[in-house]
Length: 177
Image 1: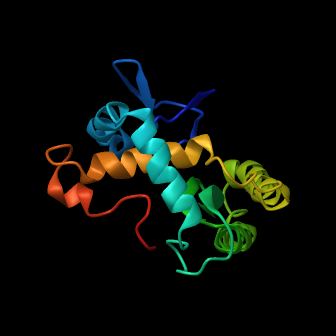
Image 2 (image 1 turned 180 degrees about the vertical axis):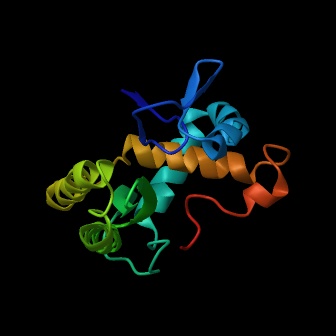
């Protein structure tokens, strides 16, 4: 299975491939310019930005409840013959990320089962992924995770002039939900 170069979700079927970069949707495909600009950001600059984010206040709640990191929560919505599942990345402190995982698990528990056959299959998988995220030990303090460094790289690229369209630059991985 492939992984989307833009959002990190697993690509089960379809997707797009441009110049060796695989994405899951048209939206992620359009983000290719941002990823190309991010690839040009020096490693030291990305690491420095990631360390600053990791040690700073949580972009979601504004508190300093611990180190900030890149987290993903998962949800499913189904209605008879239509099922949609999502990977929802967020840069946040662990308590904020866990609240999101619990909320998405509850959302999926209530609204995920109603699709035939994918709702019945995807709901326990997505809830299980959230449970694994809840139980996983936090990353050791000090060095930022590779996912946080990549999010920092994307944020720096989004703020760089002429990297992407101004409308897209307004929302980055560190903006509030």
